[in-house]
Image 1 (cartoon, rainbow, N blue to C red):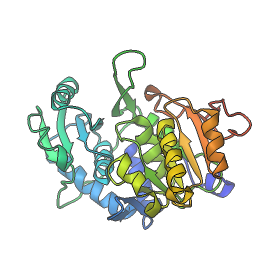
Image 2: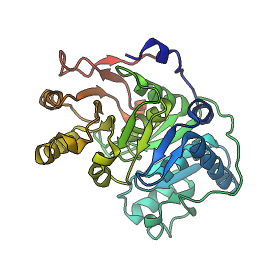
Image 3: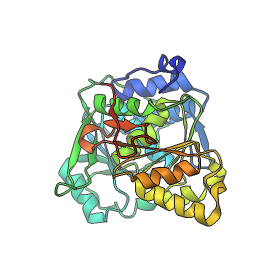
Image 4: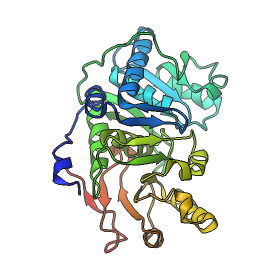
Length: 326
């Protein structure tokens, strides 16, 4: 897995406030979040997150209050999630396709106090029964992270509904951070050297934990053009080295390669982490022909996503892999 010198640098960080402090100190000047136009270093991201914490605090919220986030997969959405959780509040990333009535229903059901919405969603949520703010808003001063217990709730994610109606799974800090650390364990060098193109919604536990928090854990650079289609279209410019995706998106990428050639992927893609559905051996073989490792695994929303991972895909392509360490 990780080289010994890199393994010695990562550790289990039990809460989001500690995590935000750690990444600022560890990766300060490295590029962190980019929308392909604007790029922010880890230091700049953490400063903006601190200003968003100050804004949230100005509304008189109490520890454990719910902060809903409604936006596409944007850098503002990532920063607001970090701000809410590092301020001691519980973040709820709402699926961007929800209609207005469903958003209102979620806010009422979970007792949301503040709803941070992207610019294109502000009109949709104007009737929400809570304080509504623009997701890019921040105070002109900063606020420090707060102390929380690792067992305190950090976020609520909606399940896929495979066993009935979708449910809101309440995940504590320790679970989110364990999942984020598990995502760092991959073959070869991982720390401070990879570019990830984000193609999953942040309302999906896989997209938020492995596709985002793990990236920040390892000092990677996270790219998103706002949605999957636009981000994929900019692969030649982003030149991602890694990707976190579901099998359906992997199938789409193969189709695009057949149409436009391998350079469409940017020319530097080394591996893909795929989950949320069965990863067919045929898909693994087709990416292997392109010189790209497609690693599968297993996880579930209630378990903070990353439970097993398979790096032995060439010899055991039908396996979901081995358990991550506890």
